[in-house]
Image (cartoon, rainbow, N blue to C red; front, side, top):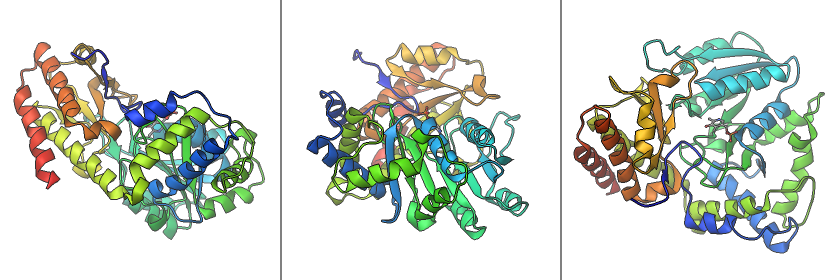
Length: 399
Ligand SMILES: *Cc1c(COP(=O)(O)O)cnc(C)c1O
């Protein structure tokens, strides 16, 4: 067995060799010409990955996904505003709490409570019904909630927000660069993520793109955000780097930013399109699901269209419990436990995003580790057949 375990949790994820090499270099000055070039290019490439318009603004800063969630909330919302949160799990709860702390009046549209052991997201029509109720300023949703493995209909929600004249924030932390999202053509206002998920870096950068409309909403605020999160502080800095000139407000994480440049170049450099990235994630997810099915496993999301492509949230079969994660780790693969407050003891999670998808043998290693661990704990299943089912899907859709 290889010494280094394979990291198959929904972030941090396995990253490319190029990213490891970039992140491991001696730190650079934040105003060195080479660094300015790398950060400027990374910001430009963010628009390509986000499929965002030329008038949108990318922001990349030291922090985690939670940092940029707070950034979105504080720049679009102020005390007294009405906001609507489409709640599909643990991270939607977090977004709602952030809005409350900012002094907003929060209406949540919730999915199922999980009492049947499965999870269903709120429907677009539930959201539409709620939107009619008040004069909402912002609609927030979690593109993929990592706690439930549920993918929401982001395009449908964007359309709704536009129709009702409401700004939209999408937490894409477990989705961006894995699930299709067309910021400009769908009309989203903020799409945010963190470096350690499908973008494929170590943790430590918060990444977001804001629409021109979102930037105007910041200008109209009467209660300013905390300085370190304020778009008005950061905007001239991001623009300066894009114009390849030095600028300072707060020191960028130079090593990670250099690694971001490498990761985004691998993704969309040389005119490559995001279509290939999205379809790689979709195909890989289908292959993993075929394997889970052979192993006799069921997913937490109840509705097939709501199953995320970046991770699998898998219910423990009869007689299996949280010991499973340790048994899988003993076989050299790290997976994650449950996270949804009510359901967390009933399922586990396997991330499948980013660089690892280019190595089917590592996907196979994951399937085999899960299958063998299940057998060891008394759930009899056919690991060879599961691996075969996985390869069949990978081959079929390759053509
Ligand atoms: C991981 C995650 C977050 C939190 O990101 P951190 O980098 O841990 O702060 C937020 N939302 C979603 C959907 C996530 O998957």
